[in-house]
Image (cartoon, rainbow, N blue to C red):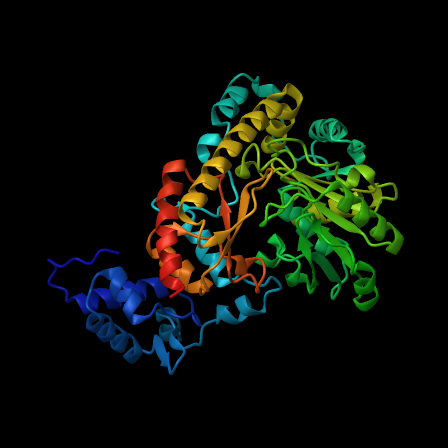
Length: 478
């Protein structure tokens, strides 16, 4: 809001009216906390005393109430006062919902990612200039309208797309008929369906430490427990799997073996065989998240765990988001047909199927070979961006950082030498219009790490950000 400084209405009255409008329209509901006086003054470009006067007026009208140490809360609204009734406190409903809120830092990242002035050096998605926008447009323009299926699809997804996915999987050594494939709205939905449909509340998920899953609450919201497994240069170490299975109820293994998020680690072929062997012996199911598989630089990764699965032990997750478009929202789960039938039923209950148009586009990309052309282009560009970032790290971080050179994917796991406060570094960088992904999002103990992504920011932006980041790290370590 921009206050009218030429108006005869005093500024504190304008601020009062602004807050009352927020409350009246339900944007600031009963039970919600107002911004601090200092933050609101900065937002509205007024003195703090002006905001204090507005708060005092609203308190006198019994709309807000200050709590010692707890900020200022909305306690009523104008309609509630007129009716002489206490209005519904939506905060109590928000707090009692099944899904846990994202971590505060994650919420701040999600908001900042839509600010065009921010340089995003940890973002896990492709730069807009690497997305096949022109190809999408051409594909739609050249397609007869009658060929587009815009109605609901089968519970498992569009049959044409599943047949194309089946052919794609065959090319990487995974035999899966269309009936064993479920189309989902991205890998995250795949995990939600698995957690809701297959895992008992209180079950344990064994996973790499660090891991992407620590940054989201998809499993925790359904009452799952996380059990951390150590990693080294070859990937997840399976040595404690048997012990943990005996110790914890309903254990399942979750892994990102190819170009791991956030470390960029590629699990070796020997380690994959060890993991499969232990899990088959212990009858431990595996969730294989393989969304980065196609983004290799020098050579393809070892065969997927699913390609060697002889007992139906592995649920395999793939996606087109990392190559075609994150907004396409198309991925898949591969598994035993009874499992896929169960997950398809749950998906129909939740959203009645992924976007028909997105499924059609995805199927055409796979059928026509456009996907392979796109993935070749992305590999080439990502390899160049990786090399550029490695050069920048050698220039600016050789004395204050350690890292491994990834063989594919999006990420470099930067280990900072100076002791830092990751939250403070995050906030200070954000004030400089640089968005970081601190390691504590993926492992509470990874205070000295940052997840760097070479997939999004341009070379010019990355150089500017890395130069500023060096200064911030040195200052933080003093």
